[in-house]
Length: 158
Image (cartoon, rainbow, N blue to C red; front, side, top):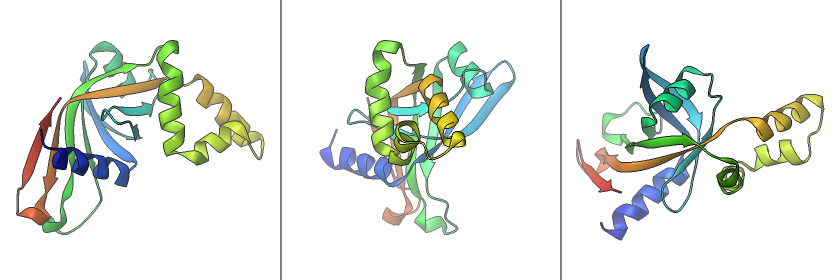
């Protein structure tokens, strides 16, 4: 696949911090907004409690889809990513690497963990040390960019 497409995906991943994560389970489909950080292989790291509906769905199935885009009101300005893949909760061995990617993307979260200013921040930092960290490994990423023409898209299979 072209390096131009990969560069475009990297820029869009870096330009945003929130994805709408879609899962499915016994109660049907579900979508949740989560903060993410990405690495060079386009893996998306996020935190979520496995007891949430989307967390339980991921534990059960692992398959997920996501959409990443800005909130805009002009159809011709739609630009973003759609992706699908498999997500799993990181093991202890994988966690350090994934957490470093996540904390590099969100330095304010690192500060909460390393230098809390008050009791509330200390509790958040402690929770971060225990909360489940996940990696979504995309198998397909679609770039949408209506600035190129209405309905324009390109796709990367991984």
